[in-house]
Image 1 (tube, rainbow, N blue to C red):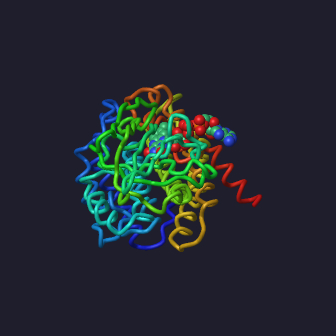
Image 2 (cartoon, protein in one colour):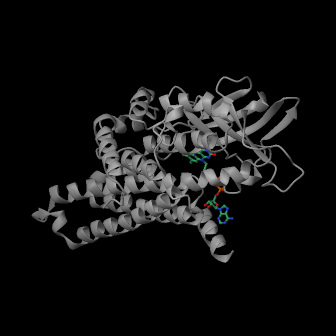
Length: 380
Ligand SMILES: Cc1cc2nc3c(=O)[nH]c(=O)nc-3n(C[C@H](O)[C@H](O)[C@H](O)COP(=O)(O)OP(=O)(O)OC[C@H]3O[C@@H](n4cnc5c(N)ncnc54)[C@H](O)[C@@H]3O)c2cc1C
């Protein structure tokens, strides 16, 4: 079941699915094993418009809507969670922040190169000491004439070492409440004092690049500021709302991909003289996966539809991410169970999906944070 709205969405889904099957599926297992970001795929992603999904055509992008963005991420995730995470974060976070709040000069400087993949985007909010409590960040930006001087450390940054630029959230005013004194800046890779110090080894999404970043007296011009001074945290919450739709879509894709594998295996594998798909225990696992993923799909595309209508969708994005990420994890876990011992080996892709999907319950706000957002909106 796909909750698509137009012929354009159906065609898009078909073309991204074909691309993922042809260009990603043959290599995803090897990239994961080598824990290597597949740089060679970047031009092909760009050719298909997958690096400028939301960027308007005047800046060289594909100018598509939020529903399309979710479809692209879901279809890639059916095959490879790592690449889905790359596409989701590049489009939604780093590029998305400049698109939504950057000056015209910043848009002209960064968006065309982001769309062609010449520069991949990173986005740095999380720090060693601040994750869920993201407004508690300690990175500072101090004004010095027309420049800013950045100091601090960022943690778990996707595209942190392969990105061409990074949108960084930093404290610009320590004298106001912690949500109010934060601003965003774009820092180019190679800027003096900016380095990606550690490539982090992970449970899943191993071929997505995750790095720790350090900023030591990094001097940047005020023209690199994204949005108004001290308003960066409010902007960031909007960026995360949209990002959460893409993480829900990623969980959906991984779940549906794992379900497809389980169905194929249930028809092939014989025990007690018959295909294991004849056993009710297996059938119920498949049925539960399908039911929960379809419900997650409706929630995800409801949130995307609201965003495309220009309506408020903060709560709906959190509901979608919470339900889809947990349903996706359950689906991958059941799909591995259907594969028995073979599922536990690296012979089959299902173990990679289970490892990859777990990040959907953590990144861009944990499940606990989503519950806080949903409850807060109910009690407001
Ligand atoms: C692979 C990967 C990629 C990432 N990419 C990026 C990126 O590109 N940019 C970026 O900025 N960040 C990124 N992150 C960071 C991610 O967003 C954070 O890991 C996440 O927000 C959780 O923060 P934390 O890890 O510090 O956990 P913590 O906040 O320390 O949470 C630990 C546990 O405590 C719970 N908890 C915390 N506070 C509460 C509370 N008030 N009530 C109940 N429970 C609570 C959490 O839910 C969690 O279970 C990435 C992380 C990973 C692993």
